[in-house]
Image (cartoon, rainbow, N blue to C red; front, side, top):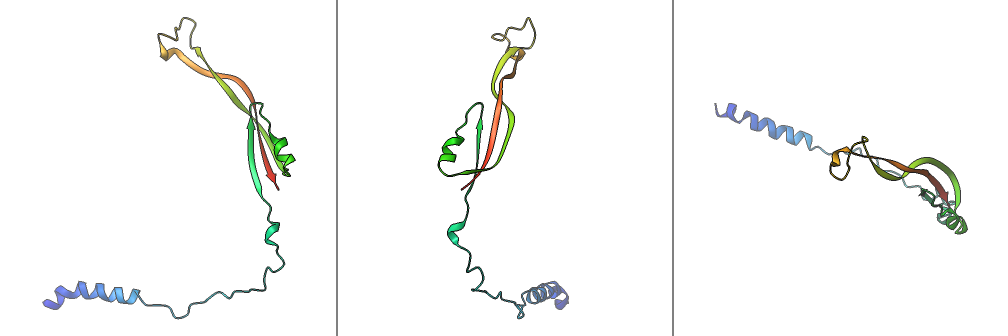
Length: 116
């Protein structure tokens, strides 16, 4: 009867001991020190992504500093917003619920991918 009560404990200890077995067939990576001797660590190129929007354009500063443009994308972007009444007889100062916000000025956002 005592053995039957201790059977779950014995089973748990056996599972624990079996699962903690270490592997003796580990493979260690072989370091090849002669590989990549011709690669110059100073030849890494730097990349940067910058955005200019709503009429700003400071790309000439980067070009003067030695950066080259790899990719240039542009898309429309809302520059400013304005509040207008939703209906003709709406008083925006008294009833804030009738105020809607809509785009005022739309400009371009330019995205540059630069490399040096």
